[in-house]
Image 1 (cartoon, rainbow, N blue to C red):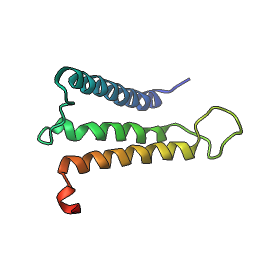
Image 2 (cartoon, one colour):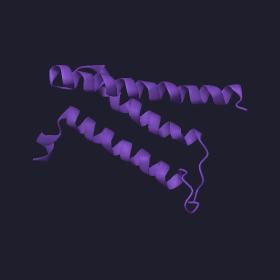
Image 3 (spheres, one colour):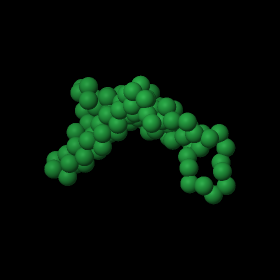
Length: 107
């Protein structure tokens, strides 16, 4: 049985997950309706979008996962958990680099 404090921690993760799903639906809806996803560096929501995904990925640390693989059992382990967080971080950094337009600094 889950106690009250762990329920609150999982509730926060549910809110982050729902926010990510809604964000996907809105952005792809904009893409279908207007031809772009509506990302504009002058809007705070554009900057918050990748952060929500990164927070959701990092919130996976509240779940205990095994350190090592268990043969053929279909469970997540620490290596995969960290890989997913690093992948999300990389995607967020690329998005932020695009927002600040770092190309003049690279050429």
